[in-house]
Each structure stands twice: as C-alpha cells, then as structure tokens.
Length: 170
Image 1 (cartoon, rainbow, N blue to C red):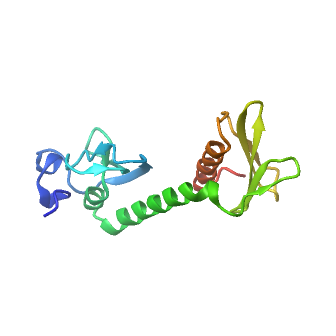
Image 2 (image 1 turned 45 degrees about the vertical axis):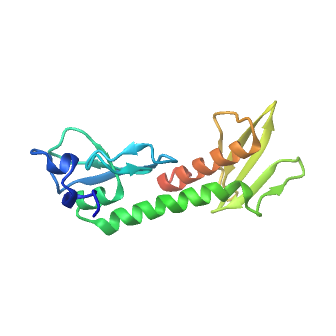
C-alpha cells in the first residue's frame, strides 16, 4: 500500500487545519535527483517537485506527483506535468550528443532547433553560448562562462526551454 496521498494518512494529510483539496500547482522543478521529501505526506522522496499553493494555507508546499494530484483533485494533470518534466530531463541529457550539432566555418558548434539557432563558442579560455532566431532580430548571449563546451550546451538548452515556456523571444 502506498504512503502517498490522503489514503496514506501520513504527514499533513493527518493534520487538522491543513486543507486537503483546492490547491493549485504554481510551478514545477526537476531537482536532478530525489533530494526532497514531499512536504504533504512527509514520506515520499521527490525529484520532480510540484509547488502547491492554497488560499487558506500560509506557505507553498513542495510535493510529489501523487500528493499534488490529490491536493488539486486532478491526478492526471499532475501526472502530465511530471511526464513533461521527465521528457525534458531526457531531452536535456541527450542534447549535447545530438547529431544535428554542426561545426561552423569559424569552428563554433551550432544547432538549429525549435526555430532557434544555438551557437556555442570559445570565450577566452572558457565557453559561452548565444541563442538567436534567424527570422527576427532576437539574440540572447549567456551571462556566464562555462568550463567545457558540453556545459555551455546544457546551459543553452536550459535557456532555450525557459524562452519557449515564457515566450520571451519577441
């Protein structure tokens, strides 16, 4: 029997004054490994965090998928969010190894993906990146330098995902 969710009766599920329904997911995060214990059931290790907010509860709770789904009364919605985070983690892991990466005449790595061009280049002894849209004047350079081309590629992937999720490329 699972210890997650209201049927487990653990953690805040058994505490008076803690709402069990009517929560909203306001954000999600992939921690990279299960480094958190669900703040609702207080038992489940969590990698993919669902940030849950309730108008009658003073703080945002960081929860696992099952608890989040019960809290918002939409288990399939929570599972879709988690599936999306898992998919993004898989895409991120394989991003630097994609065969679509090419070498420019200047010796820079570049890839065209999702309507963007990502270029990774040497910046002194370090690496940096720029994301641009060839059909517009949009161009964003990395704010940091990276010790390897691979770490610059991964940072560019993260920035690309952020741009897409927020529509910040206009």
